[in-house]
Image 1 (cartoon, rainbow, N blue to C red):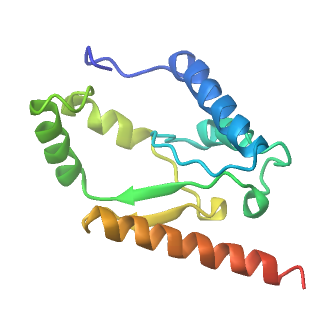
Image 2: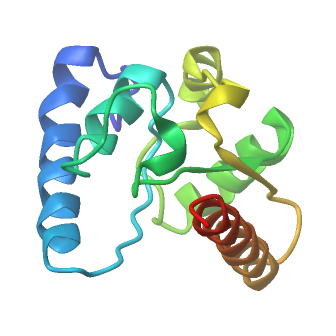
Image 3: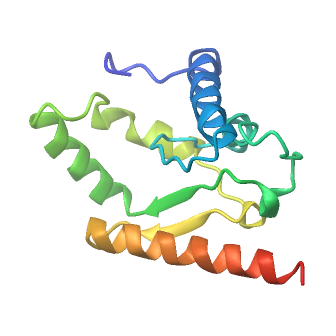
Amino acid sequence: MSKGIPLSDADRTPWLESLRDAIRERLDHGEDVAISCSALQLKYREILRAADRSYKPGDYSTCRVKFVCLKASAEVISERMRRRSSEGKHFMPASLLQSQLDLLEIDAAEGITEVDAMVRATDIVGTTIAQFREELASTVSSYF
């Protein structure tokens, strides 16, 4: 990507499997973990969900691996990428943004938490934690 060429599934899969294994190791030790990556498609998220040894494909509500999608316009994302790139903090050229947005698949059935990326980072974290707590409380109460 740093050379302006989008990744293929063959490029992504080993990387996603490494992330899955790192997540699984922490989950197996009872730890929480947060990672940041662009798991743009369902098949990529399924690789990561497999870190939860009890995950059954399609049973999103009980999976311990959760996803957050930061929502912003292409223009805002592009500008942020340009700024970060000029600061040496981003590897992907903004010219690849549209190819990434074209890959994005969000299905409401997956229960992906969508958060407005236009707010402060602390608000994004707070909103995300609140939504995860609400989801957890709902899941726990359904057992009683």
